[in-house]
Image (tube, rainbow, N blue to C red; front, side, top):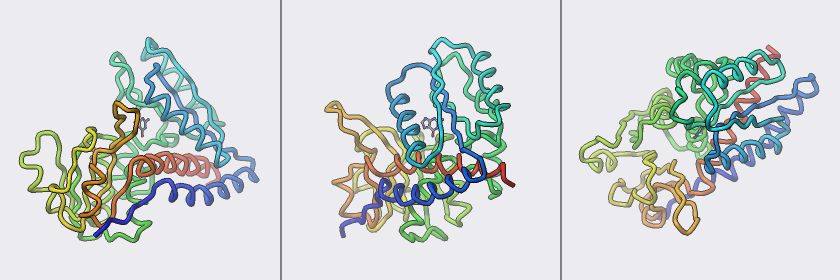
Length: 283
Ligand code: GUN
């Protein structure tokens, strides 16, 4: 068996066509969807992600700006900037790129964002709504993963999903979203003993470990669906996932590549959430 590739870049392009139309409809009603991204410090990876978000906004007609702040910025100054954006009627979405410097309490920052502008879906109000299955902003990477599975008509209901990783951004929420789709969900993490005993029982395996190419075929049940959330830069400059793609691809039924997998979908779901925030004004 050679796995079918779920190409997140192609799927993103298709979804963006539909988004372009929605944005142009909003503009006819004098609403220009606008995303403000706050970037603190000069972490090269964060800069590159933020520039990717800006470019994707432009492609769909969403307006955006980036507020760059020095690494030394105080928590108070960052909070007051967020407060101003909360009040600004022309700003529909606010995203503070993570991670933040150690002296800033990330949770304080996330909770300061108006939940109606929280296009990351990280605010506790939105996380709570997601858990109950209510309509809200869904965290972008988990939302992208579910969208990728559905795009290939992959059955989720009744399937055993195993997630490696329990971050607030990916692991925890993707499990919740798939539980809402009637999956049976197992969370594994760095303290899990005998990881293989869980992963070899997975119908859908979601890998968010943060180490290059560590997931090999012996961790897989034949025919499993493999979703690779990792983005690792090798010494030679190439990007690679957490999954050893070449090693796994002959045992899986579907697999997401890196690059052109989950990464582009994360950005595309951010655009979708920004449009949703702007549409909220029409209701
Ligand atoms: N850093 C890595 N991924 C994300 C994300 O999805 N949102 C934000 N705000 N920061 C991130």
